[in-house]
Length: 187
Length: 197
Image 1 (cartoon, each protein chain N blue to C red):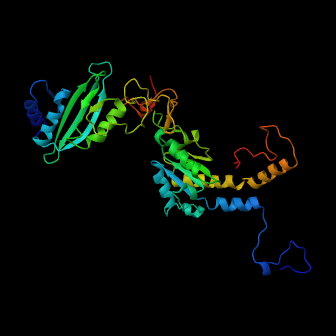
Image 2 (cartoon, rainbow over the protein chains, first blue to last red; image 1 turned 135 degrees about the vertical axis):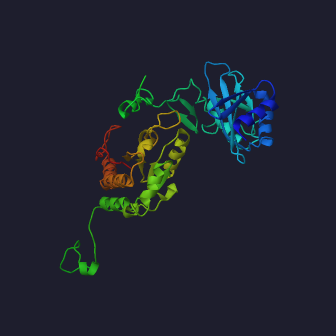
Image 3 (tube, chains in turn blue, brown; image 1 turned 135 degrees about the horizontal axis):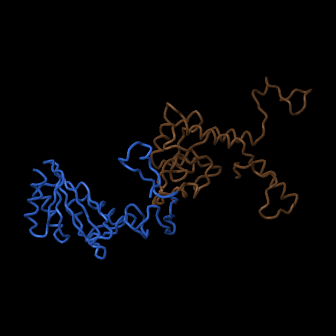
């Protein structure tokens, strides 16, 4: 089965409201959050995508809807990939959980909640996984600085802004010789 | 057993065997520095180099340090090897406080010394924000030879530790009722870099 074929089947199952895009042989289906669980259950049971390879989120700050949650599916028997995306807004950052479909989604959704602040409805154990309980920020949002912010949870952990020494060191990829590409604080 | 003609302090090596006279400080420091049992706080990649230095090619057993006790109660030096995240920071401090005196800390690698390449929201910028570090070893990761040199530097630091001298000086100062201003240096001020227990 090819990704494009799987995407077409998923599209015909979901009906209206879903779109598909294709890039270099990879297919991505974008649909609304309320159709998510049915569509992904169809993917696992009917289309044979028995592995959720990755579950991550994107912060398009400034756009509306702000957040995108990306599901990377893989069929082990057929060797076929498929990507499913859903969006949610900043005010209503909630998406139904898929941990009932693939148990691996449990920790991935906890990471998305920890880093981006997107809540997952009916998640069995939605709490922070990388940072600690009581940490007040969502670090991977665009407005959160790389150096971090000050925080303190008594007896658990504290954070302080790290000294960046002039800004994050970035490379100028593809710019020429290694001297210009060397990571340094650029504007 | 002493010869009748000699003073009390002389000894006959044929009778008494190998006896060495030395200062108690020196003897104690010699014993401490040559059997430093590490508490390997191996948190990240530096722990691999720590393990390598404990293996046969580099062998910190030559320095008495092959006994890597993971119990803080039984160890002398905590080798913080790896990135200390803020989440782990208080746990490292707790383990440090559970170690018995005398204890030392080696910050192995760039991350333990200063946060390393991780200038981020999640990494403690150097374990010396929480613990008193005796030796910093740079490297990412430091080669086992660098760790061994750090060990030798720590041994040199322990060697000159005038602990008993200081305690004796402080106690005699009290006994002779010299009133010291608070914050004044004790009678034998430690040299810069020396540990004061």
